[in-house]
Image (cartoon, rainbow, N blue to C red):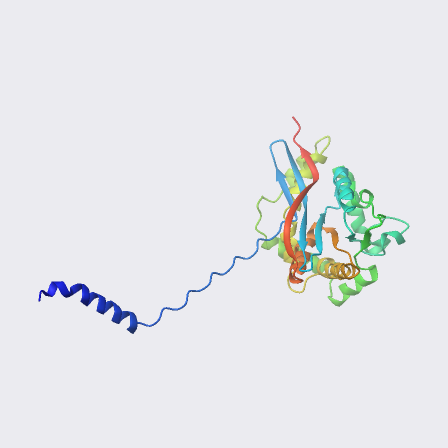
Length: 296
């Protein structure tokens, strides 16, 4: 017998023996699904003809078919921005809005913090920015007396009680903001004092100031996310918790299509809470809050 003719048979026997004697291969490890991409609720867009600061409207649906839109707010913006939001708000069963203090229909004056002295500095800062940047105020631009508007924020007393429980002060918030800012990875260099001074020397600095401020707003979400670590804050987390409690009450009352109209900085945390409740993100739309054309 020619020994070479038996080689294929010997190889086959050897391979079979090895296959049965070797340790079984471990089962394949299922691929880890990629983490869902974080939703952007505020962005600064640069184009050839104009720049713009934009806020998003992000749509979510519950397992029972309830639709909830998170509508990001910029508290000072172009009048056209607030006009567009007013038109959109008419299409909802309920629009849940932020405003620490009493509901709007119980107020005689439109003041941040419902006129509380400790919160008046917020209104003063916003008014100074509004005048300097030549923009409209949200409190003046939005129709809060619309029949479908529902107050979804904490009372002044509840706000300060929550801060006391968390031992939260201006200093502790400031320190959290500094730590979060130091941890940020910036897409743009931070503006410097010389750049600001050059802008302020212009006859009308409002447009270039809006570009400068708008670019800084673009990094706000990561800053707030950093501040919400280690127990969160009353300003964001506790108010969001309250707002979603109101949302649940409105859903139980039969509302099927709702908007939550809160500052864009609130919405990453609010989205996380919605997803934990079983909501699924469906789509993202963008609206221009600041239109910044390039002049020839």
